Amino acid sequence: MRIAAIILALGLSLTAAAQEATPSSPDYSRDRLRQILAANEEPERERGIEFLPGAILFRALGMRYQFNAFAAPLPGSVRKTTGFDVDPFALTGTEIAQTSRTWVSRSAVSSELRRIQRTERDRAKIRVTQ
Image 1 (cartoon, rainbow, N blue to C red):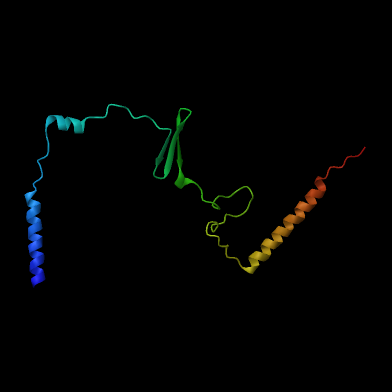
Image 2: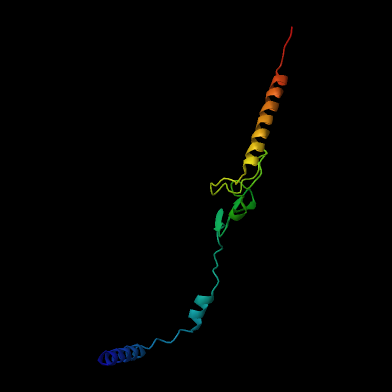
C-alpha cells in the first residue's frame, strides 16, 4: 500500500510538472508561412544514375534507360542454345529427382550422341588429292 501511494504521488507530480511547461503558441505570421510554403526556385540538377526500389534509372545518349532487377532471369531458369533442360534447382544445389529408368535413357541418349559425333567427324575430314 505504501509503494502504491509513492507511485501515485510521483505520477501526480510528474503530470503537474509537465503542465507547468506550456508550449509556445505556433507562429502563424505571414513571413513564417511564406518561408514554409515557398517553392524552391533552383531547379534540380539531373543526375546520371538514380537508384529506385527494385530499379536503376540512368540517362545516356539523350535517352532514359531502366534496369529492373526483379525482371532479371534467375540462373538456371532460361533455356539456352545448348539444348539442356532448365534446372529449377540450380540455385539450391539439389539434384533433380530421377528414377533408374531415367538414368538409363539419358545414358543411351548420350552414347548415341557420341556415336553421331564420331561418324560426323569421320565424314567431315577433308581429303586433298593431287
